Length: 306
Ligand code: NDG
Image 1: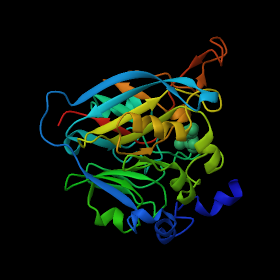
Image 2: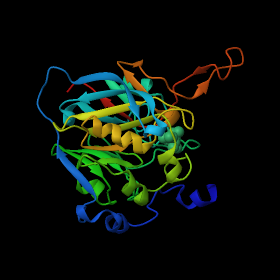
Image 3: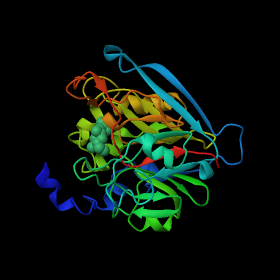
Image 4: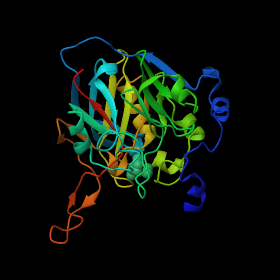
């Protein structure tokens, strides 16, 4: 796998052009490779409402309970930020930092891990815009992105290199697999057009099919941002992306993309860890496999006061 990745090490360019993405998607979407939706706006009593859930997912022959957290954020243009690992410039420095550490920089009410990264070099994957500043242009990589435009529109979908500037984003971050498009599962379409270069959990099929911890960002009918975290550990327990898309639709999510998951899946409220990250850790005395720890990750999504 490393040999194939070698030419892309320094430039995460697309394996195919944006035209292929456009031509490969279902006809009903025409040539539009993204969806936009007016963000909820105006002050509200609570910026964040966060609850946990226990839900049955899967086919009848493979039913299981999954545990997770569902958070809704109002007025996202003013309350949601993408934050680089340990703060501004973190991606350029190839930083990795826990969600807790990075969330302290912006005093986040709730924060979840967001973008994927190269686990050996620490490089951030995908396009990154934080508070109106373009921090990384990935050169048109064909992976699902979530953005908030300066004009107050939420953005979900695929972008060319030029569009990263043209769309005038306030926030932008990339994931792997567009889960829900216009209220319908988009997993089957997106897995054909997305690159597996930005994820390290095997082929794109494996990445979609494996049960694992997951993180997603989406929006509801009111244009509020939805952050979802599902507990899991790759291969062992958790949710695959087919089930994740269905669960989000059940919650009333209109568009959503899948962010970094597995051992990276972390949820933090007011600088306190509120989920169960799956990476094993410890030392010889404590026992390596006895406890689990937060993984230093890449970018985070943060909800803060306006
Ligand atoms: C997680 C991801 C993996 C990714 C790594 C670094 C899942 C199931 O974080 O693909 O390469 O971003 O999302 N695993 O381990």
